[in-house]
Each structure stands twice: as C-alpha cells, then as structure tokens.
Length: 238
Image (cartoon, helix red, strand yellow):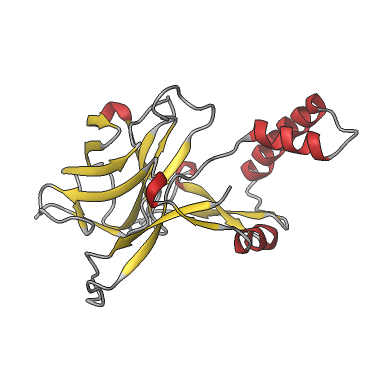
C-alpha cells in the first residue's frame, strides 16, 4: 500500500505566484481503517491477547476518553494529542456554551515519524475518488471564493454521499466544522455534488471534505474522507 496522489495544475492563487508551470500534489484514493482493523492487527501481532479482550479494551478506552474530556482535560501521548478549545466570536457580555467546545487532534512524534516513512505512488491511472474542482455558481469562480447560502458544484469521482454519517464538511482552523448531510444536496452523484453553502458558515478560509461509504458497488464498513487540499474563501453574498 502507498499514499496515492495526482498532480494538479494551480489555476487560482490569491498571491499571484501561480503560472502554467505550477502544480500541487493532491492525495486521492485514500483508504480508511477503523476500530475493528486495529483490533485485528494487534491480535495478530501480539500473541496472548485475544480479539474479544482487545475489543473490550478498545471500548473501555472510548469510555475513558469520553470521561476525561468531559472533565475538561486534554490528552497527551506519543501517538497523538487531544486539546480542548472554545470556538466562536462573542459580543460584550456574551459567554460561550458547552456546544462551543471543540476537540482538536494532533499527531504526536510516533505518527509524525510514521508519516515521514509513507511510500508515495502517482495514482493518475488508478483514480477511484477525488475532488477535482469546486465551482461557485454565484461568482462563476472555481477553486476560489464560495458564497454563503448559495449554490456550489463539487466535481470529481466517487463523491456520492452514502451512509448515515455521510456529509460534505467545511473545515477551518479558526471556526467550527460545519457539515451538510445528503438530505441538503440538490444533486448527489459520484461525479457531482450540488448544494448550498450552509448559511451558518462564518466568513473565512475553509477546506472542503466529503465523508462517505460509497465504493461503487456496496457500502464499505467504515467511511472514508475525500479531502480537497485547496483553500476556499467563504464570503457573504454581495
């Protein structure tokens, strides 16, 4: 297995540095793994620990994480870190509520080291799923601005939202992630998603990602996420 990517020409660059010779590498065909995969792997590689025991331990850790985070505590290990933060903007006299608390996950040293050893594979001939373009109908721009409350077209491959947890997500460093489930889409096809940018999205810079169980034949057990690695600027309609 390897991390597959394709080279995409940069057609929009607010710095004005892009030209016909400027490209970016976009990750495609990213596979996902889940709790069952972790249990299977550990049970195979660590003799003496049964699969049911590992599954029980995994469930116990989920409960423990929920408890400690609910107590306002952060988590640190050699694998990853979980840090709590409070998002949002407040007027004088306003106070945040529990719904404004977000969990931020960061890869620690062990995962950073693993990422540095990932094998890369140019996947142009084996493209299964990817976001190739985001077009804002209001402005007519692609891969630039998106208009809050207005229509956008997400074009690519393998994008159809399948599964109760499937959604188009707008992810920001500064703002809470806002998700649009399948029910909000006007068009939901493997090659095209059409939806209104959520009206509760705050102006700012976002990355779009599609989380789905779609494979083309039967839904997969765990959802995978298709990320678009270009910054998009969310703005109000003028």
